[in-house]
Amino acid sequence: MLSDFTGADKVFMACGYTDLRRGIDGLASIVQQQFSLDPFTNTLFLFCGRRRDRLKALYWENDGFILLYKRLEQGKYQWPRSEQEAKLLTPQQYRWLMEGLQVEQPKAHKKVTGLSII
Image (cartoon, rainbow, N blue to C red; front, side, top):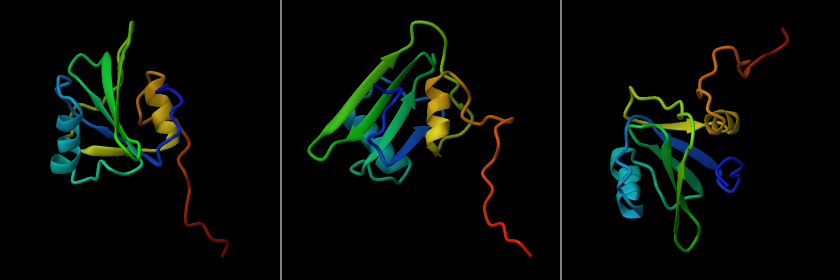
């Protein structure tokens, strides 16, 4: 379900460690207080613990929250650990993350904007 989640307009990942013992209210308070974002929007918020083999996802669905929990049987998520921020992911970065890759791929083609022919 998380690998092909397309219901959200935006996806944010909480960089650094998150205590995955937190439930819906605890994760929603992190979104509001630490990241100054609104958890009641059409946004998927991703959290990862120290072991990097589990993640929780928080999503508001018009009348209540959905809390998803995923544990990998093998491998680890490539999760940024050095920052304490919420990083907005592109759809491609989200796919990379769910496939076990880093969200910043150094060899990926970067989007070019602001070009003119003069």
